[in-house]
Image (tube, rainbow, N blue to C red; front, side, top):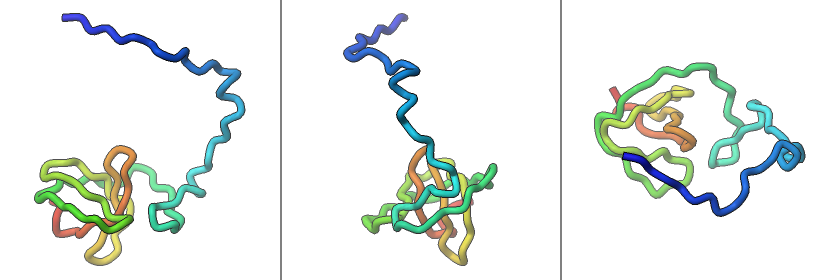
Length: 94
């Protein structure tokens, strides 16, 4: 089975990308505006239950998702799934 994709816009060239500045990891902030420390290889946990929240800064997930834990602060941990980052209750993961 083969798949095809139609390119609608040309890919960015190196020249076009030169004007884009990289943000140092120390300057990355969470959804609440607070600075997040750079973490090298956090621990990974699996969500035992789904967690759904409408609160800004919370990390929502489904049971079975793999979460990289970047900070542990009591019962609320900071984690990342792909590009999504936020806090979640620690008792939802194993």
